[in-house]
Amino acid sequence: MELFPVNEEKSRAAAEDVFKEYRLQRGLMSAPVNPRITSSWGDGQPTGSQSPRPYAQQLMERKQHAEAYCKWCDRCIDSLPKRSHQQLLRARYCDGPESIHPDTTAIGALDWPSATYFRRKNEALLAAAFYLGVETA
Image 1: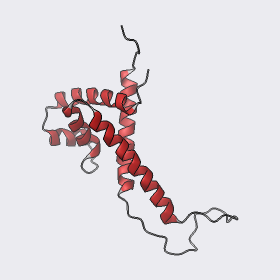
Image 2: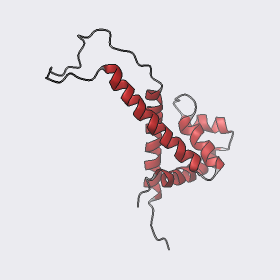
Image 3: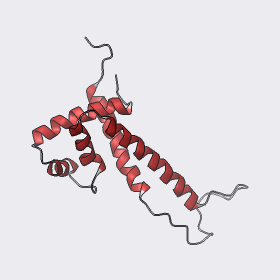
Image 4: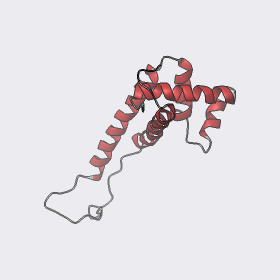
């Protein structure tokens, strides 16, 4: 008997969505900040009484948000009790370049049999969902 029934499939999917967003935010965090070339270049919005924020400032704010998001995900991964779960999540979602087959890349990096990898991946995503606070009932 469970006190709080957890929908494991939805919880895993929610955790995977968080880690996919992590990949996007990590890419944005490392993007260079280049000011616009000319001041006449606009964003298509009509001019108003309040001037829009400069491009570089907007990008810096987005980079700060991305950095905070990545730190939050990193803390959650570091909080997982099993080292194998931490290694798996880092190899699959955090480390290395983007690939067409990320699971195959992670299996190669970890040097685990595929059955072990996918079993541990399910366990790691469920544990991460708890620590991320995205468990679904």
